[in-house]
View 1: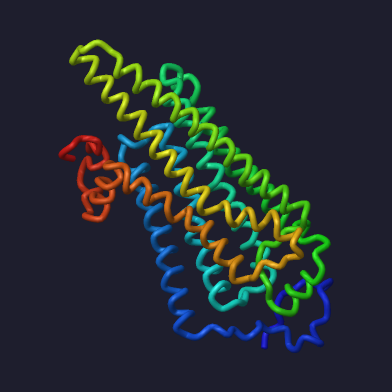
View 2: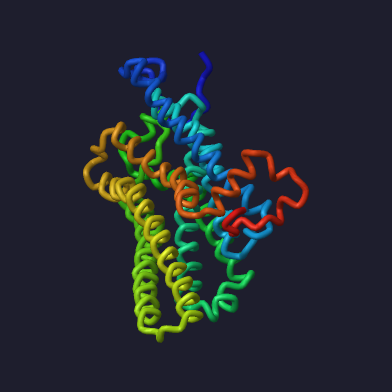
Length: 343
């Protein structure tokens, strides 16, 4: 049997046997069911975000500053589906980490980094939509190329420094009794946080961006209602009414879509981050099965993001059809009008 690559300062596992994984009590049918549902989520995450990435990079009509944030978020969710979720699936189903201590450290670092990066991108999209709906006349001056680049740099750089610095230093598990024994003797590989870092992660990675998103949604909703009221009180002028109805529908759609994105975000991530916050104060009494379920619920947010665009935006469905049918390989396919009714 190969000796696992564990640090020299971890405890002797002689009293626990040979340091192998604990036997899983799950029946084969349960394991196969888990693999099916988790594998389906991974497949949808990878393919859905890949379609978003191809659509925005290929079709010229979609190459806007606003969509560059969506492209970056899709890249984040795609990487989460390719590099993180498959290994997490095996760990969750088999109740064991087979890939060694060093890879566990990097997997956990990338897991935290990409999850937080995805959340920060959602917050950036909300900020962009706020500027577009609430201050459209100054949007081009507010959300400039340099501002967008700064937002994207923040979304990637800050979570990367935070995640790798925290996990590789093992400060997140500092002071947790029995943690090193679990890692060394039972091939344990999961992100756990002490009281300090559980509070910091909850506040910085979920509560703050979530609060920003809720505040932005409330403002967009209020502005949309105000615009609708102004349009309804306009004189009966056909040209104005036509333009007004278009603006009204556009504002309402932006508010509705952002509201659904925010609702899915809260549904997927709130239980996991609440557990991260309170579990250290409860003596780490959360069952591992429940912890895994909440983690996968958080992953599911990256699965839902492209589905939301597919459900609410016709351009996404038309782009998907052009990709699946192979029409993107046709001459001048990048110049087609995805917003035209008969496109």
